[in-house]
Each structure stands twice: as structure tokens, then as C-alpha cells.
Image 1 (cartoon, one colour):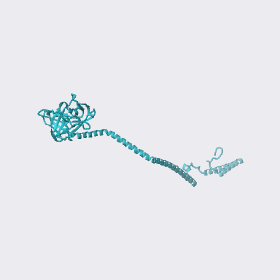
Image 2: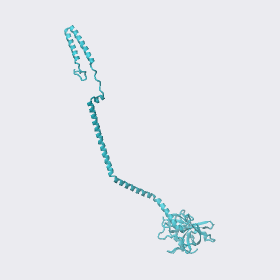
Image 3: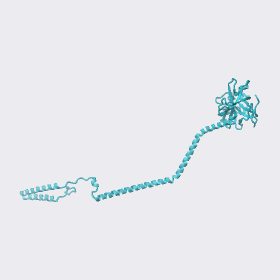
Image 4: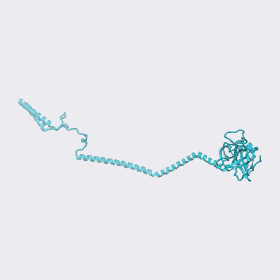
Length: 363
């Protein structure tokens, strides 16, 4: 009961019989008081009886209800409640499925659009990719060719040098004799004219110097494995030139370079020897200086090369290789002084214009 006498919802339900009995006891007690001592005693008895009856009623009241758990509160206890719960769960599942399906459709549409966009532009992209690859391939090939340029240049120079040797080696002979001390003296010679059973060979005076005195040693010229005796016809010591003759004809001769294309500094020249496994050998060099009196070059001139021809890139003779010609009065390591071919026409050769050279005056 509240303080104001109002009944709370949590209070126990009324028991009308107990109230009536309690009320009767109270009424009897009041009456006994008014009746005197005897009435008071009766009233007390009545009050005691009423109290006993009230105690009995109180002991018969039910226990207050216990607190409910959340499961008891949430889970329905009736068929209608269960049906309502199932319907709500079904509606929630349907809504979730609708949302998921809508998202799936959205993603599917985006994917299809992307695929369609890729397919629509694939041909153009493919052509562009092919063009790019081809351009890169062409650039790579060009870069490789540029990188291989120096190597190819060396290879082509090697092939050119080999061809020059093949072009001239038939005209170049190996010369061997002995010097004044009886020691071997060697060099090379090249054919400038071959007719009437004789062939003229220009060589180095230094190689055959001993034959200028009597008794003269025999001079031999070799082609392949065959030695042929040669005769010393004339010589010019100041220019390290000598002229040999052999009794052979139809020998291949060299061509002289004309004055239309004079040597220039930086031109390539080649010294050719008649000694070699293939019938000759060749070295390459660069012109360091050129004049009417000298061809200065760094083409190596060994002992077997002296007296051999100095040729240009076309295979034409521009000079005579020498190891002793020294127009400057001093030697220079690594640089050789060759005799210009036109200088051979001053004495050892007679060079009429347009005709093959002939022998000059006999020494």
C-alpha cells in the first residue's frame, strides 16, 4: 500500500473474506469496550480470534513472482507469437536478399560495361600495341647496328685488306740473297713490266747491295716454292731503289697510281710482301706525310717487306717500301719513309706516258 492509502500494482490481491473477518473482530472489540469489563474481555477474545484468522489468511497468500529473463521476455509463449516471429524473420530475410540481389545486379552491370568498353576498343589497342612493338624493335635493331658499326668496320677493313692482298700478291715476289758478310739478305720485289721474255722487278737497293760488287752473290726471286735467278740491272742508292730482270714473261704486273688522286695525310696505305703462307703478306698504315720525295707512313715494314709495293685502297702502287730511305737525315721509330713510285722513273725506270715502264740505263 502507498503512503496515501492507494493500492500499488505490485501489492498482493485483496482477500475479501480476511478483510471481513478482520473487520468483524475490530467491530466486536469496540463493542466489548462499550459493554464493560465483560464486554472488554469478549472484545479481546474477538480481536485475538480475528488476528489469528488474519495470520492464517496471510500464510495462505502466494509468493511474489520472480524477475523474467530476456529470453522469457523475447520468445513468444503462444502460437500467434511464434507465427508473428517467423513472419518477421521471413520479411527480414526477403529484404536482405532483395538488397544483396540489387547489389549483385549493380556490380554485374558495371562489370559488363567494363568488359564492353574493353572489347569495343580492343582492336585499336591491339593495333597500337603492335605498332609500338614494331617501332621498339626497329629502334632496337638500329641501336644494335650502331653498336656493331665499329666491329663491322673492322671486319670490313679486314676483308678489304685480304682482298687487296689477293689482288696484288701475284705481282709481288720474295727476294733473297746474301750480304757482304755472307749473311742472308731478304726483301720483296714487284713486277712493273713483262714482255719479250723478260720481266722487270723493282726492289730495294738495301736488299741486294752486295750484288753491286764483284764477285756478286746470286739473287733469287721466289714465287710459291720456286726460286728464279734474277739479274741486277740498275740501282739508285740515294733512294734505295734497284731494278731486277728475270727471264719470264706474262707475269702479272701492278698498276701505278696516277697523279689525279695524290696521297693525303690520313689516307690508308698498305705494305705488301712476297713472303707468306698464302703467297704474300700485308700490313696496313696511315699516311703521316706525303710529298714528291717521300711517303711517310706507320705501316710496318719488316725486312721481308723492303722493296715491296706501297699500295692505296684501290690496289694501285703509290710508293716503294723501304727500311733505309732517310730523306730527312734521321730515323724515326714506328714511322717508315717510302719512295714515291714516280721517283723510280727518275733513273731505274723509263716511264713514258701511257706506256708500260721500261728499264732505265744499266748501272
